[in-house]
Image (cartoon, rainbow, N blue to C red; front, side, top):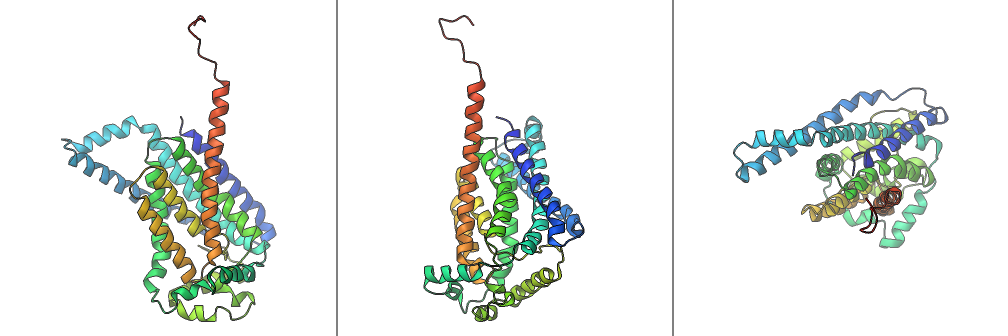
Length: 335
């Protein structure tokens, strides 16, 4: 089993996303590469911090196990796994590039696919919950949670990716890694294009009336400021950091579901915590008005389907490879 099993499909997915973003530029009315590509360095810094933390935990475990020189022992282990380490670093670099390409294509898709599904999704939410579900959180102080929704989510995704890359190579690990890139490169952009919706917090701004006016008064000021920032970039056609207005599908929920699947399928005791975190982020996505509940349901379903598809893809590849291998000689046949 080779690291190329996940790396090559992930490169193809990332390259495809970048090419799609470049081809979409003239249709979307943009005439230059986004200026925030320099933020890639920040991604690498966070990834480096995550790697150092993992190494520190490993040293602590070795010391707790009674290893006399844990740092020297770890150095030997890293040298023995040099190839895996190289692919882990390459994987984090590739994930950073993929994220930049996604931020590039997201506002472009919005520009070529006008919002049409907001009323539909709002009505679906109301039919499921008997009310607009954000009202379940009416009167809550959401100021800290607005910060957690963005910062803790981003840190959790990056930490899970670093952790997964540090695990021993396996078909399950490969499926999880390919699935990560598939969510950002395929599921998100295609879902956004075919089911274009802005989200509850933008409902009035896309001309649909005051159904969510009370929601805007319920969320903290920072959420209204961020939504204003995103809306200004949207109407002015600016490719800025984090630009793009899109509700369906929720990649926040798709990725926290992916995090849960990573820890569950790797047999980690963190899996129940990851499940609770996914539920928390789902609740916040509705409470803060960024998403309809059906956006999150679709995001979670997309993560499950993506992982299943990647498993099937790797399984077919393994079966095809086995069919091509020569049969071992039987006892009656000469070797």
